[in-house]
Image (cartoon, rainbow, N blue to C red; front, top):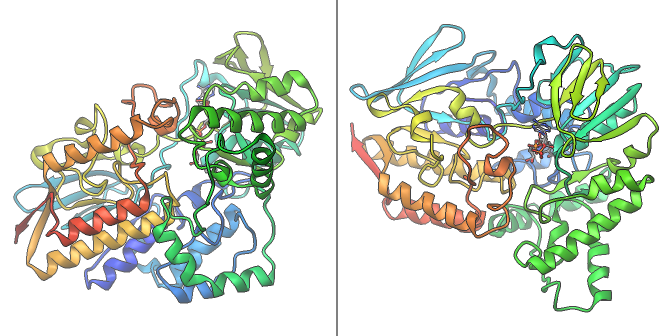
Length: 525
Ligand code: NAP
C-alpha cells in the first residue's frame, strides 16, 4: 500500500483481515496523510468531526471524543495516531520511504516497487492510498531562487512551527488553505501582504467546542448517522433538507432561510434551497446574499470590492469555510493585493514584484494548493502491461473504471482514484467504501483462485464518459479550479471525479460486484 493516511491505515487493517501479509510505504515519518503534512497555523477540517471519522468500528467511535465541531490539525493527527495504535498498524508501516517506481511484470504477474531508500520489493497486489490532495503545487515564478528570505508551502510547514513575529509576510493564494492561514499569521506578522488572484465565496464556520450533551447524543445516534451517511449523496450524516426552489418563495421567506443557513455556518450553506447549484437565478440570489455579508464585515469598501469581485457561481469552486478571515482585512498590518488586476511578475531577492509594484518580504507563504486527484499517482513512475506509463495513459485525461482499477494496470487498486466521488464527498466515508469494496474483491479472488484483475477498456471508457457528462452539465465542470485541473500548467482539463452522488456510486459498485464483477476481467492463477 502506498501512503499511511486515512485510506492506507484502513486498507492495512482490512487486508490483514484477509490473512494476507501487507506493508504500507509512507513518505512522512508519521501517520495521518493530509493531517500529517498540513500543519500550518489554522489548519482545520471543514467537515464536521462527527462525520469526518471512521465508522468501521463502533468501539472506536465510542472511545474517541472530539472536542470541536470542526477539528483542527493537531486533534486530527492525534486521532489517526490513536487509530494506528488501537489497531496495531505501525508494525507494518515503513516510514520515511517514498515509492519512486512501480512496474508491472507481465510474466510473473507481480508489481516491482522501487523505493527512495534504494530498496526494492515485489508484490502481487498494489493498493494506492496516495491521496487526492498530497502532491503540492508551487507555481514557477521567475526569480524564485534569488529570494533572500524564507519560502514555504503550507503543506510543508515545519513540525516545530514557524515564528513570524516581526516579519513581513507575503501569502500567495486565498483558497481553503489561504483563508485559514492568513488570519493566524496576521496576528504575529509585522505586516502581511495577501496576493489574491481569484476572489472566492466563503461561509463562516461557526466552530464551537462540543459539550457533554452533544457528545452523548452523538454516541447515542451512531447507527442513525451511519444510515444517513450511506443514503446521502455526499456521505454526510445529516437528514436531507426539504428545501424548495429559492424562486418558489417570497423574498422575506428566502432571506430568512439564507439567514438561518448563514447562522448555522459550515459548508452546507447552499442547501438552504434545493436549486442553488442547478438554477442560475437561484445561484445568483445566493451569491449576492454572501457578497453582501462579506461587505458588512470589511471596513474599507475598496478592499471589500476586491474580496467580492467573484467571477464564478457559488459552489462552482469548493465552498470555503472560514474563521475571522474577512475581518483580518480590517487589521492595520494587512494589505490585500489584487493579483488578478496586477499579476505577480517575479520573485526578487527582496521580495515579490507585481505589474504594479514591489513588496519587500522576509517570508513568502505559498498557499497555492495541490495537483489534485492524479498528482500523487503520477509523481511515481507507474508502468503497467507492456511497460506503458500511467502518465501516458492519462496524458489526455485521467480515468479508471469506477475510479478503482485503470485498465492495463492489473492488480493495482486505487482508493479514491479518478472516476470515483473522492473529493466531492465526505472523503473518509468514501475511503471506507472503497477499501471495503477492494478487500471484498480481494477475498473473492482468493476464494476463487483468481490471480489477476484488470478492467475492461470499454467498461472503463463508458464509465469515464459518464463521469465527464455529469460534470460537464454542472457549474463545476464549467469553472476553472483545481477541481478541473486548470490550476496545473499543462494538465489536461476536466473534472475527474464522479458527481452523481456517493449513494448512487455505492449502489453501482455493489451491483457490479454482485453481477460477477461486470466490467472487470479476472485471470486464474
Ligand atoms: P486551492 O483551492 O487550489 O487554492 C490555491 C490558491 O493559490 C488560489 O487562491 C489560487 O488562485 C492561488 N494561486 C495558485 N497559483 C497562483 C499563482 N501563480 N499566482 C497567484 N495565485 C495563485 O488550494 P487550497 O487552498 O490548498 O485548497 C485545496 C483543497 O484542499 C480545498 O479545496 C479543499 O478540498 C482542501 N482543503 C480543505 C481544508 C479544510 O478542510 N478546511 C483546508 C485546506 C484545504 P486562483 O484561484 O486564481 O487559481
